[in-house]
Length: 130
Image (cartoon, rainbow, N blue to C red):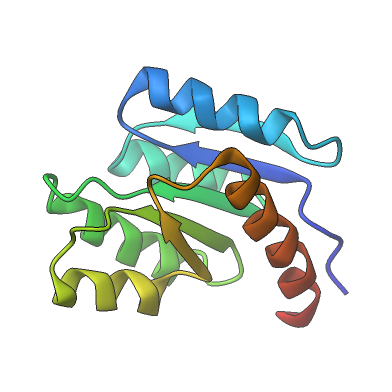
C-alpha cells in the first residue's frame, strides 16, 4: 500500500505563480515540494529523477505543448498522481483531454484552501491506486 502524498513537483511556467503554489503546499505539514520546473522535457526529467508522489501541473492554454507534456507525463509515470490546474476558458476538447489524463482537475483561479483540499483527497486516492 502506498503511503500518503509526501512529495510534490510543481510544474508552472511563471516563476511568481510557481512560488505562490509552493507556498500553499508548504503550509501543509505532511507535504513537501521537491522541485519546481517549467514545461517540456525538463519536467519529465525531474519526475524521472525525483519520482514525486504527485505533480501539480498548471496548464497554460496559450502553450499547446502543455497537452503533449501532460500526455507524456501520464504515459511515462502512470502511478504518479497528477493534479492539473486548468483555465476555465479552455476549449471543450482541451478540457476533456486534461480531465482524461489527470487524477484531479481544478480551476487555475482556485483558492489556496481549495488546492489543499484536492491534494488531501488525492492522498486518499494514492492508497487506492496500488
